[in-house]
Amino acid sequence: MFTQLFFYFGELVKPLIFLSSYVTNTNSFPRPLTKEEEEHYLIRCAAGDEKARNILIERNLRLVAHIVKKYNNSGKDMDDLISIGTIGLIKAISTFDIIKGTRLATYAARCIENEILMTMRSSKKSKREVSLQEPIGVDKEGNEISLLDILG
Image (cartoon, rainbow, N blue to C red; front, side, top):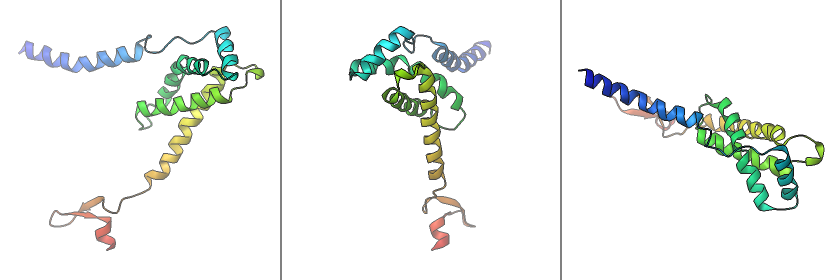
């Protein structure tokens, strides 16, 4: 009996261990750039260097993941939110002006949040759409009734 209890306990705890290692793993994203490195790559990116742009994107993915954590309970898949946030990061890098004197992370954080919020707002509009063939209930005989059956 104790062996079964330990087995079931182990099966319950195993996903939590993997989840905690995923969340707390510091090696999942590359380290952020220093201020000097950031300026160097921003200047190269402004000159049209694609490699510098990719480095800026890769090194700021940790920021995207941090911002996405705020929207964990939004009902959206975390991978989708990270993809949307990455689009915001790419837009931020494309429109960032180094002359203004702010850090890229400060500017990018707003762009990432705005991209996520815009996507969430646009998806709310599609939630109101209802399919005519989608079942909305059952009749007295147990058959599914769709909106098309009621309207037709």
